[in-house]
Amino acid sequence: MPPKRKPVVLVHGWSVHNTSTYGELPARLEAESNDEIRLDVLNIWLGKYVSFQDEVQLDDISRAFESALRNELDDAALGEKCVVITHSTGGPVIRNWIYKYYVQPGKLDQCPVSHLIMLAPANFGSALAVLGKMRLSRIKSWLEGVQPGKGVLDWLELGSPESWELNTNWMRYFNKSSNSPSFYPFVISGQSIDRSFYDHVNSYTGELGSDGVVRLSGANLNANYYKYRQSQPTTEASELTLSSIDSEHVEAVRTAFAIAEGRSHSGDTMGILKSIGESADSHPTVKLILDCIRVNSGQGYANACNEFDAHSKTIHEKELVEAEDRFLLNDRYFIHDEYAMLIFRIKDEYGQPIGNYDIIFTGGDNDSENHMPENFLMDKQRNTRASGYMTFYFNTAVMLGSAPVMHNGNVIRKELPGAKSFGFRIVPYTDKGFVHFLPAVLSGTAEQLAKLIIPNQTTLIDVEMKRIVHEGVFQLTTDREAVEFKDVEPGKTLTD
Image 1 (cartoon, helix red, strand yellow):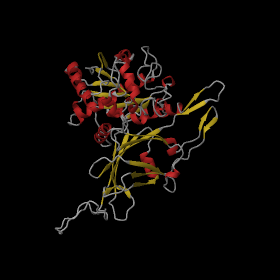
Image 2: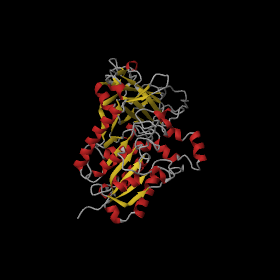
Image 3: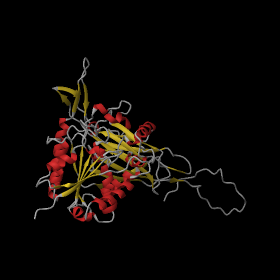
Image 4: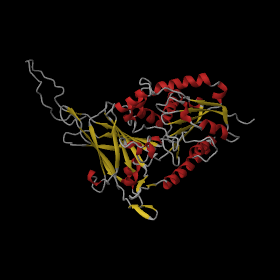
């Protein structure tokens, strides 16, 4: 008896309030279903969730999704396990739901989803989210009769505690040593910019390494987590090293990741979802989705990972140079390098956040901030709600080195030598008083450059700072005479 056909659930992104957002994808899935692509075309469900009310948070949407799934799909459909296809914020929504309802309780084998196919998912957030909460965005939302959706935007802001929690929990469960024979996650994202959507006031809409909304490194679930702890303080220390011996490392299990050729985040012409037409053309998103659905075994998933890697390499090389013809002016070139994100979380040894600090990156032969290559850092954002979290966006061609870039036989960028080594120095603003902090230093090495700066990936870096406590915070005396001690000065550093 042949296996039954799988129901399909489509889940949209933030601030969507019309199911037209799915375009012709349902029709294409219906048309493509056959004995190999076994989809239950009578069970294609269009998700409708509220992200445009400020009080709604990601956990609320995940809870409501669980209820909707149980109410609308019968046991037979759920038993066959669904194919869930998401766009943008829909990816974190469903991952959050899977973690809370199936991974955390230890019931992943009971999860009613076999294939999670995420289109341009903001898995590590979006650089645009912080702008979505600003006044101009609120005015636009008011004109459209909705709220900005602050509860969801808080999650999406780069370096949010909520996204950190989901991503670290996800990595710890789906790590190198784990493997699920019945759950297959996929990430498909573009790196093209639809120039008709470019906002000259907001350069993030044309940010290289992204689709105009979500960075490839912010979509990709292939990621790493490192935790470093400061060494014990001494009375003479002016800075404390970060120990690599005492560090913790978690590497996410390999996840299938593909770049969709010529696709941007939104829009009827280039949008990864909205540009899908009803006719049976060779649309890059549809082809990749069908490749995902064909996977039905662990070996098949491993093969898909390899094929997607090779495909992405080909697309990156093909799209490396974008030329803009300008009448009576020299052509303008956009070089689509690969980028990496580093997200730092700075806390003290008791787990309390430290918000007042700077991070200085070092490299070169002298491990100096002055020897970092030019234009290595493209962006940084400190989380507006949790200042202990800071996100940095690196050009990996500049950091790791790059061959000359050619176009029509001409060199448009010379060879880049790379940084050779990589380290960082965390400089706290609280550096005086009875309790303060000393700078934390991770000396630059070539090994750290290779393991922390990875093209199209995100690395989470947890830093535990030591609280420097001085004599005078607490004293004992046998003198029974009344003594004023409000003007006591800090003494020596207390050492354990």
